Length: 233
Image 1 (cartoon, rainbow, N blue to C red):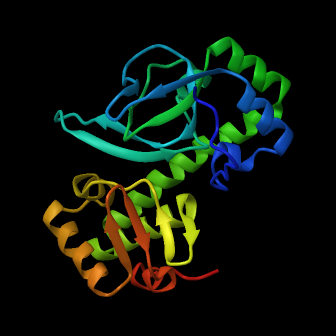
Image 2: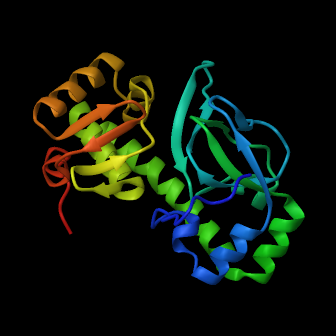
C-alpha cells in the first residue's frame, strides 16, 4: 500500500524529481505506506503534529481559513511532492489544511525519522528548502498577477504553470491531471467564478485547451503562453 506507480516519472520540480536517483530510492523505501480517499484530510490547519507525507500518486489541495471564515485555496501538490514539511522544520502549528482530491497513495514519515534522514542526507534537506521556496514564489506570483493582469491573462498564466510543472506531454497536448474546480481556479486567480467560467469558455473556443473529467488538456501551450503574456525562454 502506498508504493510508487510502476515506472513513475516524477515532476521535475517536485521533491522526488530533484533528488539524485540513489537518494530518491532510499526515500521511496522509507516511511510507512498509507492511502486516502477523495475528501480525506491528511493535515489540519492549527494542529501541532509534525509528521510529513510524501505523495506517491494523486493530488491534494492546500487550503487555509481567512479572517472572514472563508476558505482560500493556496496551492495544489501532486505525486512526488511532500506536504507538511514546514511544521516538521519549525515546529509551529500547521499553517494550512491538506485534503485529498481523489484516490491518493503516500508514505508517512514521523518527525524523528525525518530529522535523521535530513541529517544523513543533506540533499533531502536542501530539496525541502527548495520546495518551501517554490511555495513562496508561487504565492508571490499569484499576488503580482492579481494586480497587474486581467482575469483571462491570470488564468492563462496559472494553466501554463500547472502544465509546465505538473503536466504530462502526450501526442494530443499536455495533460494536467490535477483538474481544479472552477471555484478553486477562481480562488487561485483572484477572479469571480462567473468570470473564470467565461474565460475558460473563450480558451476552449480558441482551441487552446480541453476540459474533461478530472483532467485538463492544454492543446496549444505556445499560444496559451501568448495569451498569458509570458515571454519564452
